[in-house]
Length: 114
Length: 116
Image (cartoon, rainbow over all chains, first blue to last red):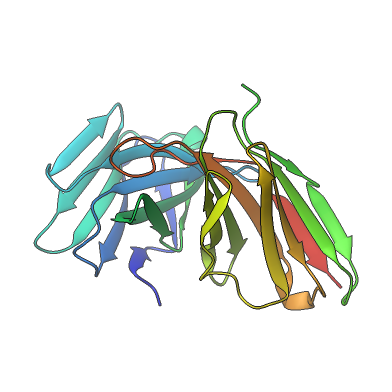
């Protein structure tokens, strides 16, 4: 059961361009939406996260846009750099008892070319 | 802090053998998660612990998989007997309670398992 759908599966962007990755969720109980970045041979690492009470969050070149009514959120990478080449995962979680279970999207492999 | 430490980094074994993966979480973290990553299914949550107690093991694929956390600094994921379809990268992650749910997950570098 795929609760978080992510697209595209892969993305090639030229250096300096904008990378956009989209995610959609079904469960309206989700209340935390992080993005993780994974380099080859490494574990995922938190990049940026948002809660549904705001529509946008920006950290440097990375921005999350959140549309609660459409149940969609996206990651925008401005001025994309070759060092941004990695796999990006969106995720969503909701509190269940005393903890939050994090459900990941299937990932987007980003390649930034020179 | 050394981060989450997993061992072995790579494991190649034959079908039917027992496999044990190990994880040392970040000191002070009270949540520990085991994930499996494959090309087909992405990152799947297998099980997670809170204060060494298993909370949710609904992601464990079948009885061949078991996980333990005997103390706050050590966890194991065991597969017995292993099958080729278990080939994947297994990640351990830890986090601490933030008052609004588990916070940032800190992942180890993973254990790449190949079952021949």
